[in-house]
Length: 110
Length: 111
Image 1 (cartoon, each protein chain N blue to C red):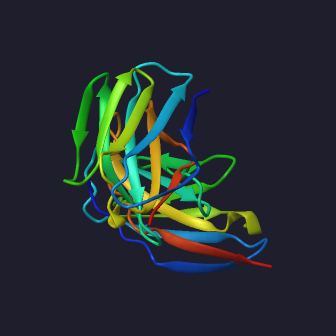
Image 2: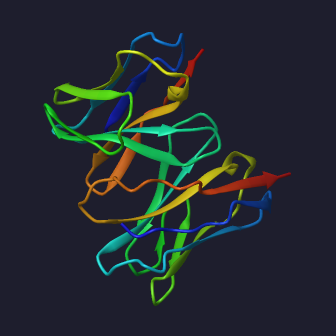
């Protein structure tokens, strides 16, 4: 079965600092991978998705970027964090007809 | 992907059935109905999905109306651990999960 590793679980970063969140997937090959953000009390907003190595699609303009250096690795980055980047970030993997989510990273920008 | 509408919140007594409705009036013929739930500060968890027939698994049952414009997720014997936000989404089978999950229904199961 597939497993999604996402870390760290929580992160507090100052405004203007860089960000790197990593997501790795086990138990599958060539998965579709997704990064979502969830503001407090709100639904999930899709940020990026990737259908393969080096292939990134952005859904919304923002201060973040994503990369997929390996088949089962998906990275969310920022060069300079903004206060508005605070939120709960989730990595997801599509396997057949289902999406499986990581446990999320709660980012607080101070 | 078609949009869905769900009530903001619902209460349910422990041990009773929880019936969570979802409207998807613009659903197209090749779109499936999916249900996920999210327990506080965790990633969403898949529950069940269906096209037009009713579906049942170990977690829940999914009832889809004949015109497919709405559906109901049924948790037959709700427990306190079922307290979560439940998301109803529609998507094409084999397609991605680019659908934005809405705010969902916050289900409170009370003792």
